[in-house]
Image (cartoon, rainbow, N blue to C red):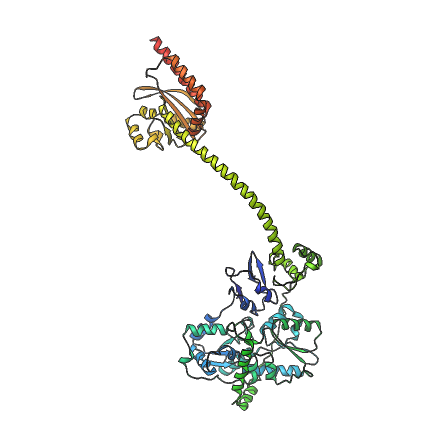
Length: 617
């Protein structure tokens, strides 16, 4: 299960986590940061520097709760850094009692495990046969060496950590079925191997001091509700100084006089990284004893905001107090008893280094970033990488993107602002043109609306019946004359729905199939006689919008007509003087101007025919 995670919703891309990550196990992708679990060493410093609390480590409180509620016996293994963390509790014995109230059957201090490992460490230093060792006491150190200096794995002291040693001690004392929970300030310990050489589980869960505080709060456990209770034996001696940089050597009782010292002691990210680099380069003929943090008491599992030297003093005062009435003989017997345990450990290289790109690609990446020469390579570190060159390599490896570079982003932003200014000018002109266009459109819309009303009025003044229908034969528009021709039922419908809009044409006229035929075949029916209620009508059906809109004109053949010359004159005046109006009618009602002209000519012809018939009579 992944140890460190980033909540992309809370991340503000400040790159502070990338700056502190010693192995660049964090990459940005689609403007979001994410952890690369296989590269992470679990140091947890990304958690401590993130002000947005977007970076978090894996919590194991649920696992511990289940262990405490089970039928198994459970032992708490407390890192000596408790003296620096729980200063708000008046006496360490109250702290022990609070753990017991939480449900732990046994409470042990890891200081005794430190004492055991210190003795084993001293043997290696005294009988090194020219070989120099790197202390394996710090899980982050071990992970770093295994993944990024695999050639130095053989230089790690082949020993379990003090808390693993303590786990082995309590399992020997109470039996292998005992469950153990390590309580610490270290997040890297959560990913440390928790089994011994025989693949037997040593540690069942790891929680930080912050997680323990959450459990106390959840169960409402305070020092005021418990009595004094001391740690279970065996207890440690100088192993309680382990959280401080020189602590393990103090437990070994090795004199580190500067003139005779053969062990280099470092703590903190910068010293740690530099010492490993120089050790690998062969420039150090010394053993290394280092912490990735500035001592365990400054680990990411501590409550944020603590002061380094105050915490250091708290640990020293705590150990002094414990040693004031210490039973040395009892301690020596315990040391002899548990020294027979096998504290040996093997380390396996897990090389996670990415291949370096060739110089040509690096140069191309630098040019892309605008770093054309060394003067432009500011090495400001704002991107999270110490040099522009390392940042360029990271972009090639897919760990970073150019936008992380402050200078690159600034130049890009300035270029963008110039383009934005030009765009704004164009937009300003476009808005002005749009306003003019909108004004014109409003005027045209109003004119069209007025024209529509006029045309509809004209339509209803026609002496012939006119109807328009869609492809489902739903009426779009029908004039007054059409309504009158179709009878009383149609008039009733028209009173409720003016113009018979959306009425079904098939239920109003019996000759609707003629309309269907025109729609389907896109043909014209110039003149077709139909009989309706003993009246003879002349029907013209024509497509207005092929396959979608059809129109029909119905004329009553038996109505007395005016004189032939007057009809012809009026029709021609309509054609000549109102062609534009007819075109608008055709546009709004779906009929072309040409069709309108043909229809009107048809009316003239009908009138001529009528005159002839009347004359013959």
